[in-house]
Image 1: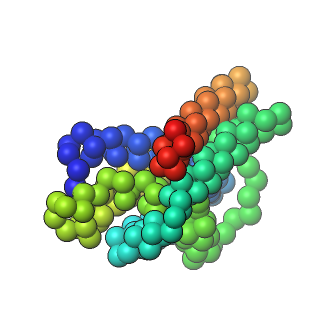
Image 2: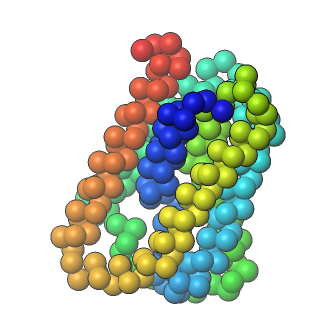
Image 3: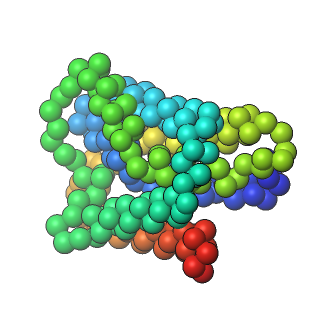
Length: 215
């Protein structure tokens, strides 16, 4: 593993992405708001299957195979940035909705909640971006087991994502009810989300350009 500074940098970037709303967080939040905390936590259990899939996939060589393709890392960086820009536009566009706005979703049984959470997570491009492009950059191939480093870094990310989403599942219902009568705060939340997502997207574009040798 690289030096302590690099590890902290990895955790900072991962932490920022963990608190950035994406498909997993929106799904857990929506279920918690419409069906209660238990439904949100069951959905989160399904979401965690996606975390584990990508972590073990990266650790056991999918990352190495993917990054062996010329400019694959840069391409994934551009795709990830485009996805963040899309989320940013969805947050600030006229008529857009905050994930904290109460939505009327049909009630689902626990098994379906779990399966839908797993499906949402497995199809989440944010997770693919993190485990297939971000994590390998912090692995030192000259310093110990690559598998061990991958698992340690991946497990750290999973803890961060699971903790944030568990907090969302527990608290989003109360927060949504609080904000439902305060449209100005909802609008401010949407714009704050859009600004953070745009900043992350710009940073990813810059990193992708450097990786491609353009900047």
